[in-house]
Image (tube, rainbow, N blue to C red; front, side, top):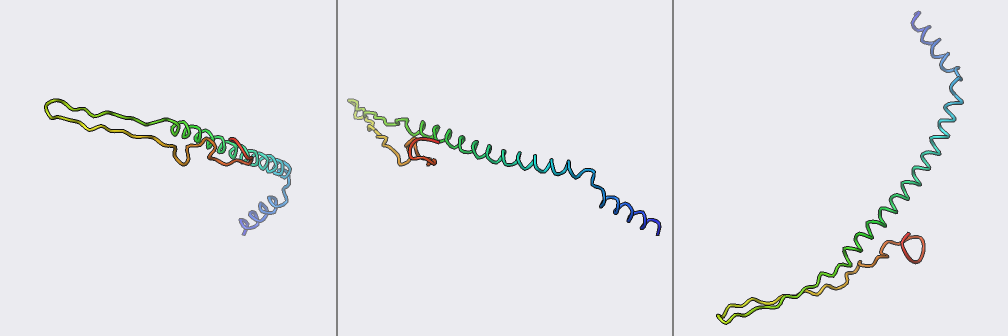
Length: 107
């Protein structure tokens, strides 16, 4: 019986205690502003990473991989066939594939 009264007293004291209320409200406000700043910052980081990866992909796409090798024929009836390949522009080889908010260029 005494334990129940003690627990009720502790619960009543905790319920009526307002010493840390102001600090809690300030922490909630500061943490909310920090989270909003993190969301905006991470969004900008994601956009910039996408732009840099597109630059790398454009650099790979702009490499011309065309080649030509002529065949060879010897006088002893041995021969090798020639080979060639012509690299053409791919569908997404442009530097401006990602669409930003504007009408031209990277963002």
